[in-house]
Length: 209
Image (cartoon, rainbow, N blue to C red; front, side, top):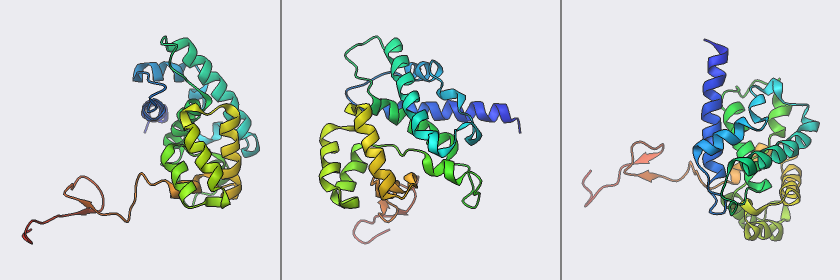
């Protein structure tokens, strides 16, 4: 298998995922083509494998620099100046890119990259924040509720970093573990009459299959 071609395909998919997620906010609509241009004009695509990431202790500094570069690239790409491409939007872009690039093909028993994987930031959205507040995770219900009110796409750099700090504390540094609270996909909930989805359950009418 051609490694360079594989990386290229993974990057195309990861940028599409990142762009789609980041433009979900009503405050910051942009096209897929603009999302690709933003990725190309920042240094995000320099990160092709986990080996390209810095020491986990330096990851937060890298993340901040990437957010700044992506915000600048967005400012130069998106001509509609009413769009608010904030650090919250940039963070969503980065986090989805890294998740799609790096987390889907690392065997669970592969410990060489464990610390780097643990340092990756989870995507932050309203659903996650609402569930964290509902469950009073870390005893921080008011904090999570306040950030639901602010809205992830409105986060400043300081807003975002405070959330990551608390997630890091709650998960003891295994940041990806916070995603168990994300309610967008629930494996215990049956899906009726859609065989294309997992956990499919046939619904009957008048007790007739």
